[in-house]
Length: 593
Image (cartoon, rainbow, N blue to C red; front, side, top):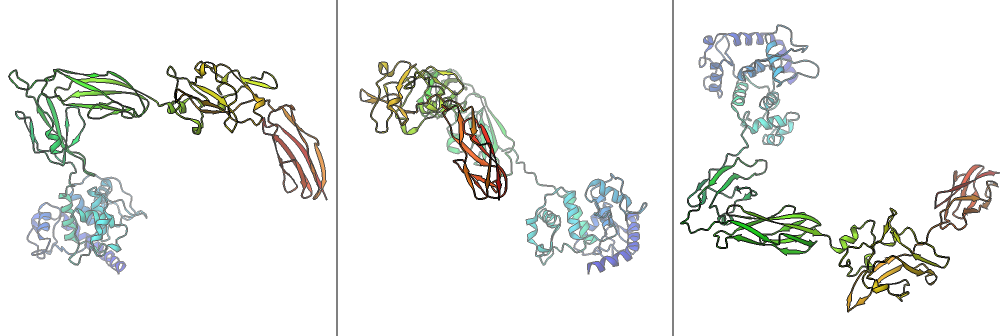
């Protein structure tokens, strides 16, 4: 049906457009507002008269305005440009806009203004009637509205809106275009002259509501130090303090006497930002006859404080003079990740580091500070020691020596155990993995044992182990299974002291220098097998473990013992690799029928 309509309009377009051109250039006096023979009582009569008075549109030579006649895209662009006062133009190259056409300038202005760009095929189709959804799309761009697809769901024919639903919802939400009495929008119907005039005049007069909330109307009473007009939707900032939501009971506790600046604003609410603030000044000074005594200073005790993570301590603030009328203070921490402080000056250690605790008087803003140092707990110190590893199962009531700290490293950091002879070995020194010597290991009341039954071997270290340990002799002949050596805390005076850690005796390793095979070539028949013998050098190498692999398992396979099994005719290379040093040797295997 629509194609038939468009065909019809193409046939009469020349006549219609010539008439429209005549109407647009006809002197206003010829067809003045209110003289049309077809607008009296029309629903858009007032807007039509306004459009004519302002020069946006005119009637026809026969005295009519034809308010319910369709309007072409070219006519619509002329109206848009006039209503919105658009005059800047640009070059155009649409294939269906001929040079010198009466609407050529209107198309150039439309393109320059960005509210229309033409079709993908390079045409503008200025002679075609414009639909209501096309008009809605143009108006949305003209007013920079945001697409509101859900707002279009109010119309009964929303399901037929495809590409235009967001635009229709936007202009409907703004009240620029409306639906019909049957609750439809008829998006694909052609827009009439009257509808176009009403929509464009409404769009021109539409202003996007401002989201900014004005500053609150609050008043200060500088004599009584009070504020009127506050509501729960507001927040306030006293001097350099934080913004605080208004609460009548809490606000009543504020002492506004003296010199203070109070800022009050509406708090942010969803997408609506906080409003500008109203500034209130309190400047009532103390007089000699006043019953109030002004604050002159403040101090804290202690001024320095050292805590362990998790500990608490109270800082005491003293206001001068002692008879000051307003002794209210606020507490704050420079680094709450390290230490926090509550309204009573109680400091809680959170993590190792430093923080400055500040107390400030409500009256006159005097300040005093306490520098807080937070140290790690013993366990945190142990865990953060370089490369430290421990077995929590063996850590009981451990602590550093009082004049420490002295770090304790586990056996995984011991690289070297010096050999005295083939029977005895001792820990001449403990070495970190980076090669530096650990010379500050200390225990209190420590012994060692190394069997799984818990019976002790050896004796206490000199002076119950309270001296620095530089040498510990161990006889490995009594530890044939290489059980862990446990440094075990003793009970002295009925209390545990020191550490209970888990060590292993580490013997100096002899590195692998090479590996050889007893055969470098081998010939087998299919399904045959033979075992290669690998020899790791030197013979005293600590780790003689090796792995085997075949270059082609479909020809010959090899297991973990070096046994080769021929699978099919062909050749394969068997490689043995040492775990220590990754040394290799090979044997070329040929499999015959």
